[in-house]
Image (cartoon, rainbow over all chains, first blue to last red; front, side):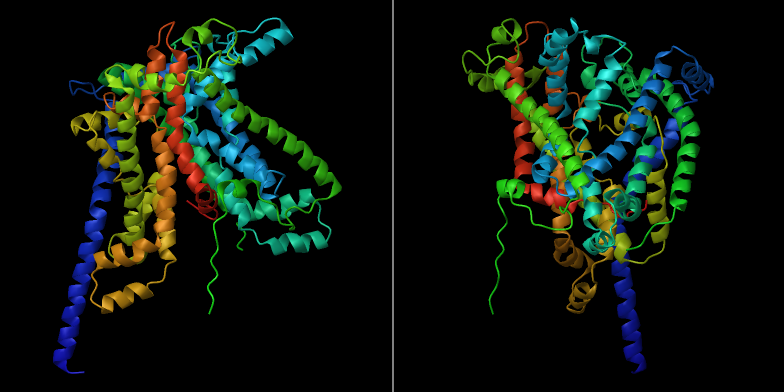
Length: 305
Length: 308
């Protein structure tokens, strides 16, 4: 190859590299700007909001106040924290339940195609619909309420009574949550080679051992991912509290997520500092714990297949 | 040479079709008992969901007086008032926003979020999986780390930023919201494009195609099945969205948010059957989408093996 050809090739390559670079950054620039504004700037500003007054002066007052509210028994915020933990524990337990449902569907229980669609229905329908019907049914005048009255003599107004309100919402989230993780777990189960089951059955494996020694290890990457995602959403755990709180009955059903939502919604800029300070405290405590557990989970060896 | 044409089974056939014998449905005696018991539990749970539809439909056809004071919500309507569905368009409102406007708002939000919001992660996933350049690893790792860190309470700063950028209560917000290219979907696209052969692109390069043509005409069309699965699931989620609408778009409430607002503002004596009719109307698009694409939704989404 002559020197001129080499120079031409180099020029062409340089031009190709330039065009490639132009393509790369033209495609990435908008998502990167989005990330800088809506992730980096928003989160840095959130930290500043926890310490900066509207007039620009600095204070630790919001932080101290949020700490007091979170650590003192009986406050709205501590009740919200307690409720959030209740929902979080339910979410963790539901992973096991969802696995069981996915297992039965995968094992082709009679009517499994019908059940798969029906259990997915609440994901298709707005929470507004489901909460409306559920609230009407469990009200003292509703169908379930009437049945309870028939059986026990009286039916309390579950959603208007602080003793039952959170439990009633918890029950709702369990009722509509049967299809949770169904697609993810189902997808993971389908990937397990059937030969494994056939060989194990020939060796006389019991169904329980099949779950413990074949299914669980092979599904571990999916199960651990779902567990980690649930863990990451610890402080966001809850139900559709806004929909249940439409009557504003003050029956202690707040969760942290809803408390923050309502503060911003109702009080606007006046609540920014309080919400940011509370969020910062929770992040400072929660993030190391969550990342630590995540680190431990990732130490569990995964099976390649 | 003959070409075998495989027909897609109908929706009903997919649900109620016969099961093939396989190791998955060969059961021991103990399993048979367990599966029978589970079947009954599943059936009862399913019936409760079917009951929801029946209850809603049944009460949507009643007279408001009949629903509120006469008998129980389980009684059949004395007269089938299908006119309630027409009344929904006249009577249901969230302040200044009428029922028709709510539907239009929902359509606008759903279309933008599902089509554009599913496309942006495809772009970032493609570029980061197919090109090696300075800063690639940094961008990829930062995106992953941000997904792991559980940050709480940034909602206040987010709202402040929306106000600063004049995106609060502005439909332009939907477009901006769709430009987030580094979410969980990006990982799926990244894995998808990472597994695609570069051979076609190379051939196109030799023929003089530029990177944009390679992406839009060769690589992205291959990702269309994944893209449309996300479009459908995104559309279902967007149609049912209410929290975000209430908080950031109070004058552009979607159907779900508007119906919530109607109920929250409703005084005693509100026309509940008409409200129920509105709820049923709100379910039609998502149920239709699901009926059309259920097979795709049920089989396409899996995060097996994903390690964040």
